[in-house]
Structure formats: C-alpha cells, structure tokens
Image 1 (cartoon, helix red, strand yellow):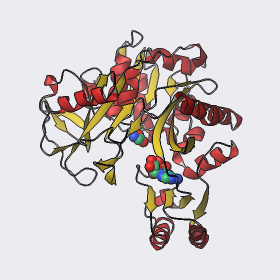
Image 2: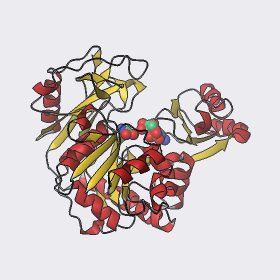
Image 3: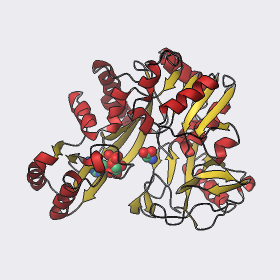
Image 4: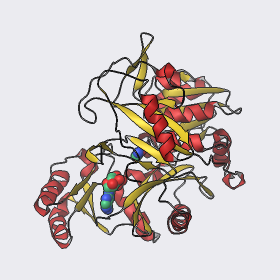
Length: 423
Ligand code: AMP
Ligand code: GLY
C-alpha cells in the first residue's frame, strides 16, 4: 500500500516509524513531516487543512490510506471530504468523520454526549455571550477552584483553572464578551473541579468494535513538580502504574463501552483513535475530555509497545472487522522525555543545530519540531525531540532516556528532569 500520514510532530514521526516496519507498506509519505520522517519516508510540504492540496497529492501518488495525526483536519471534515469525492472515496481515512470529531471540537457537545450516555464526568453548565450574567450566578454556587473551558479548539490553551471567584468572573467575561480565544470562546463550559490523578486512555474503533491500546500518563506543565505554564506535553510513561486491572475494568465498563455504543446510537461515524482523558477520583474514573486523535507525546510511548502490525490494524478499521485483530503488547515499560527550545511554551528561537543524534544508542529519538536545513538538523518548533526508552520498570526506562539526553545538544535546550516523579 501507499500510505500518507498528515502532521509534523513527534506523534507523526512515531506513526511513520511504526508504519514503515509493516510489510504491507510499500511507499510512505508524510505531509509536511519533519527531519525524522525525512529519514524513513518522503516528506511533502503542504498544510494539513489544505484539502485540495491533499487531494492532488493522493491522486498523483495513488495513495491508498491517509492517517490523520492532528485534530484540525478531522474537525474540519477531512474524512467526509474523501467520502464525498468520487475520485477519493476508495481511499481509507483513519480518523472520525466531522460529526464525531466534534467530541474534541466542542466541549459542550462532548459534555452533552457524556450526559446522554450516562458516562461519569464533572457536573457542568454552558454559557453564551447573552447568558454571561447567568454564568456569574452559576460560579457563585460553586466552590473553588473554578474550571472554565472555551467550547472550541484553542490549541490546548482554552482551559482555565482559577482559585478566586472574582478572577473567575473576569475571565468568563474575557472569554464570552471580549473573545479571549476568538470564536472558540463564544461559548464556555463551566465545570465542577475534580481532584485526582490523570491518565490518558487510547481506544481504536471501526465504529462498531473496539480495542484498547496501552494507557499512558503525560506531563503537561513546563516546570518540575508540575509547575508553571501548560505545554503540549513534556514527557510520558506507559503503562501507568496506578492503573490496576480493577481500575482499568471500570474504565472499560463505565466509559469505553458506553462511548462506543453512544457513537453508534447517535450516528457518529468513527474509524480511528479515541483518546479519553480520564481522572481517578477516589477509586473511580471520570472523563475529563475526549480527543479524536492520538496524544503527543503519549504516542511516543504507546506505539513502541504495540507489537501488532499497525497497517493491518488500520486495514481492519477501514473494513469494519477490527474484532478479528489480536493486539499484542510489549510488557515492558516505555518512557519518553521531550527536549524543548529554551523559552517554550512562550517565545523561543528556532534554527538551532541539533548535535549528537547519531550517538543515541539506548533510546529512540522521535523528532518533533526539527527539520533538515542545508544538510543539518535544526530546531523548528517548541517541542524538538522525544527520547523514548524501554525498561522492565519505568524507573529503568526513564534512566535510559536521561542518559541518552547527555549525548544530545542544541543551544538553549531544556527538558523536565522529573518525569515519573509522582508515581
Ligand atoms: P482539557 O482540555 O479539558 O483536557 O483540560 C485541560 C486540563 O485541565 C486537564 O488535563 C486537567 O488537568 C485540567 N482539567 C480539566 N477539567 C478539569 C476538571 N473538571 N477538574 C480538574 N481539572 C480539570
Ligand atoms: N498530550 C496531550 C495531548 O496530546 O493532547
């Protein structure tokens, strides 16, 4: 098969690394890709939301399957675009259709879905510009901290957690009235605060059957001890030690099964990854959010633990017989540590040469914000590279990731030195 992966992060390099190992993959394209994907596939420069450019590429290269990395093209309906085009309808697209991608594209839609299907989640109400006064009143009925969520996609920045009631009211006004997050905050979901530890659960579905992938925990804050600003993710561990079989059973029975049934009942066509952000409150799981794609950097620890041929899995998803697939999982722990540009997640410089990649022997370097320029590998983003390692325990694996980091340098390189500290 000829396969196209859309995206350019560590997640997409990991997809490319895994897909390239499949005997079913004859030719692999990544658009736009990065310096990591350039080593194992053909990069094509285009925007992942430029559907016409993607169509032209798919026709020119006779691509059979498109694997969608990020959420934007899914929320904008790339799967439907393929299904509604006579020249493209035969191409397998891995990712939900637009109606289902709203689970990530609208927090209110996701909350209504969760309530309708009786899936445990935080209590909430949603507000619009016209009902901002009701929002203030609702905040007064809650205890701090206050959780405010922009309804639409806000590049991971749309959730505010505030301790002070007056500040919460001011921020609500900024979001609803002053368009703090643009159109994304023309609606705001206000939620009950849940106190607990989080994990990321990943489910594959063909719309009818499902398979649960290894779970993971990511570290979102820039600073050690989970302090400072939110980032895309500074590291990840799989499996999550506190996720016992009993707890995972609760997740499957109370969350995964009703989610897949709910998609069918509501006629939400879904062939792809469901990423469920779960929080453990006491001994019980609750849903924090749905994403309609894989996580980054969770992919960098989840896919390396998957022994089964990923292209075979994708073919089964497209054909609707995922039930015939048997997932084989590596029992070892995997960890990844993200190397980032100094200054990230605020302003940072680009174009710094990355040295020492070839000296890394005990980890897999998954490139993220890194590109080839004038024959050199240079930084091109905030999150630059994720170093993934295996071990019999996560402690052993994380030690390897940190040892590998000593081989690598670029100007103003930064990373968290405490991934796994809380486990
Ligand atoms: P979300 O984009 O919905 O995943 O929210 C981003 C982050 O905010 C989550 O990963 C949680 O750490 C935190 N968060 C979201 N909703 C809640 C909640 N109801 N209670 C506590 N923390 C939350
Ligand atoms: N690592 C969290 C995410 O991909 O959204």
